[in-house]
Amino acid sequence: MQEVRHNWKKEEILEIYNSPLMELLYRAATIHRKQHDPNVIQVSTLLSIKTGGCSEDCGYCPQAARYHTNINKNSLMSVAEVKELANKAKNSGSSRVCMGAAWRNVKDGSEFDRVLEMVRTINKLDMEVCCTLGMVTENQAMRLAEAGLYAYNHNLDSSEEYYKKVISTRGYQDRIDTIKNVRKTNITVCSGGIIGMGEAAKDRAGMLVALSTLNPQPESTPINALVAVEGTPLEKEKPVAIWDMIRMVATTRIVLPNTQVRLSAGRTQMSKEGQALCFFAGANSIFAGNKLLTTPNPAVDEDMKMFENLGLIPQKPFTKKEQPQTVEAENSRYKSLGENPKWTRPEYKIERNEKSRKKRGG
Ligand code: SF4
Image 1 (cartoon, rainbow, N blue to C red):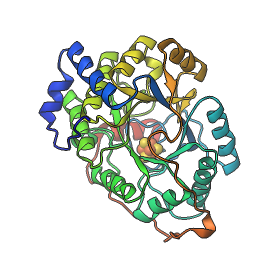
Image 2: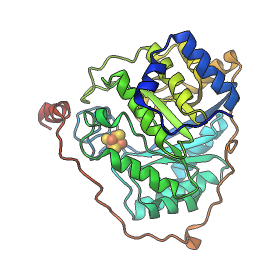
Image 3: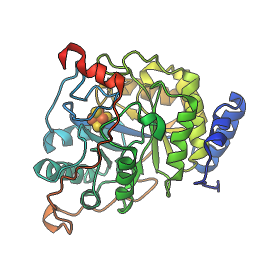
Image 4: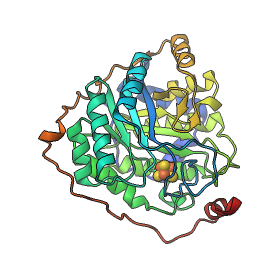
């Protein structure tokens, strides 16, 4: 078995990231083959169950209320709508449904109760259920676990240093604390980040240090390529070069050997050949469906054709970990505590975020 290290140094990771590409690919692919079946890819469908109007200032995000983007906002979906979409996702080959709500953090109350019911409903469809709802407390994480949640996503986004140039409304430590709260349950952790936000390679390495230090390391790590959306502070960033994506995936595979590395946002900007190299380098999960929250994604048919061409097969649900049990609301041991914690609001200001907010008199 490949050793899992929690003591990576940034310089070591940077050296791997910058090594000659053929060496890097060989090293990453060798680890990948030892730890995973290289022909099996986990396929998730991302549903935006509540879109837009978010109070946060994440510089990459079109859903932040303070920026001026053209997204269609939606209040929280009904359980029936989510069930229908989950069934569709299942029929098109997804093993996991990931539900995203544009919230700073989870607040106890009727909306969270509805999300818990969505989790119960999808788990009963025998699909893995993941949520990304912002920060969560320990009791909220327990309630999600009891409902049958399989994974919770909370990205670190970047290195701690570069994070401060992208987000000012919540601290890096809050992210780590949310992951720690999730870890107190049997829910698996999904955490990764975004490249192409103007960060340097050392920040990419810094993010991998932070992820590798988590013990256990996340079961799933999405690597997103920024999709620069007009109206956001990062609207002018250039698309990520495919070589950077391949290097990042390969380095992630080496640093997080057991993790499922997910090619996430930005796949529409990548050629099939580029994606194939990412799979070779260790990516073994994708998001399917023609939308990722609010940004475009390849159509399912197109992905299935690519799979056929590359001889890849979708992973069955609960391959890595058994299906959680669903406890019905009336039998729950963890009741609502009426929590609405403040979490932190760091004091620093980010010039480009402020500029985008003020555009068109925001
Ligand atoms: S990334 Fe999430 S928390 Fe940040 S602005 Fe977008 S929806 Fe809100």
